[in-house]
Length: 461
Ligand SMILES: Cc1cc2nc3c(=O)[nH]c(=O)nc-3n(C[C@H](O)[C@H](O)[C@H](O)COP(=O)(O)OP(=O)(O)OC[C@H]3O[C@@H](n4cnc5c(N)ncnc54)[C@H](O)[C@@H]3O)c2cc1C
Ligand code: SF4
Ligand code: SF4
Image (tube, rainbow, N blue to C red; front, top):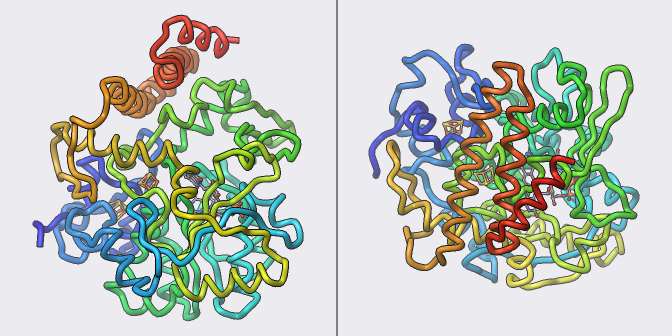
């Protein structure tokens, strides 16, 4: 057993993803998840709790080196899964496609599969509620645009469709699940599902009540500042935003042309393609949570079923949206197969290599890139990953990209904080345009200066 850790140890080592599991377990009114100066959610509480090293925390924090890893958890959760892949994990079957039934596909970010599976579990009486992420009703009063809540009707589940690249946390819904008997499903990004599985091992009530886990593939977690940056660049006041849409669906445009839309209190609607935003290139890593630098699970390896976008042609050009789905549990396998036979799901079987291909960039960053980052000296708790430190395999060019992405993530948080404090948005977006242009030239044009200059001019408009 590695040494005992406290929430403070993980937070101060830049390894806290803000899942809220530790706060749920503390069950103390003064232990809470609050936004830090960078717009990331972090646990806060009395020093007696925050600094307290404990076995339970060490075994349940998803970034603790003393917690079981994804391989161990998946081996125990899905022992009968016939397929095992070094990137995809254990699984029954993988698919590509979308929901055929009703308008799930059009309402979803990709093919609508997450909302469909959650709805189907409710319809079949297998659960009483689904923990998922919805928009808050009055974000200016609540101080956040999105949060977890438990949906108990089909209409409520469907109101939660769409991806939210925004910090959310599990503490309140974990407390509710402990307090209110019933069976639940939880939708979450890979590290949150790992947190749930670790807690299920320690807490028999949670184990009995959380019956299903629905995982989302994940590139990284953005901070809350991303929304403020949308507002700055679309030149609308942040304190008037009522609704945020990260990916407006337009069946007539390629699915990977993301368009962000803000609705203001007076009904005004503004939107812009991510391509025209200084920080809109996902690969550049703007506002990434520092813990994501040390993540090695792209496809929710500990979830009963996991969903992503099929980022390969011809699917990425289909604006209606297409899922790639990895089924790990036998029950989910039956649920999906029956619906395919009934014509309610339009899914075709694919292999692990296909799934890998849809997430090629995510795997590069969290295999080769992670191995390289693990060779860097860093203070504090050392993460224990399934990838070994390696600075020899990546080319010089790839290393440079990993470094630039790392610095863009770290400095986007700092520069935004300063610009916000002195109320000078141009300070931030001038810096962000430059950073994005450098990244663009490096990542897509072998470092050509002319391409960097061209991209910078495009972003300046
Ligand atoms: C932070 C983040 C990063 C992602 N990165 C990738 C990636 O790199 N590659 C990829 O292929 N896919 C990624 N996804 C998943 C992708 O965006 C879609 O969510 C997925 O394809 C499912 O689409 P759908 O149409 O089936 O889901 P929908 O039917 O639209 O349902 C989405 C469900 O997810 C819930 N949800 C929304 N936001 C969150 C959140 N932040 N945390 C937990 N639950 C949430 C909703 O409440 C809803 O239940 C990411 C998702 C998130 C939230
Ligand atoms: S990652 Fe989760 S459990 Fe670990 S310190 Fe952060 S909020 Fe707590
Ligand atoms: S990249 Fe990994 S650590 Fe970061 S939010 Fe996604 S699953 Fe969590």
